[in-house]
Amino acid sequence: MSLDVDLLVWVGRRRRAALDPLVARFSALGNHGHGWVVLFAVVAVGRGDGRLGVTGAATVWGTLAVNSAVKRVIRRPRPAGRPAPR
Image (cartoon, rainbow, N blue to C red; front, side):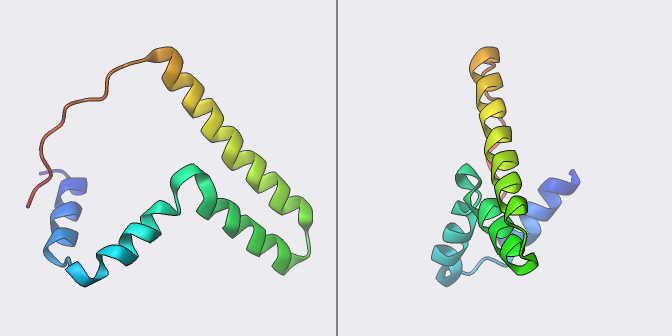
């Protein structure tokens, strides 16, 4: 197996159903770059450098926009893949 599948299996074996809502919320932070933008804002406030927050947000959302545009242009179907290991 590859390293990523080994890691997925390792994490899956340690899964606790009670933590599912917390993990789902944590995972959702990555949606639309919100977690990264918040991180940039916190660091910018800590350093007293507003430009860092603006630059970070622009970089994150700019990258997501380019990524989305490329996906729409290329239109390659996602690989079917295999079911996740239990």
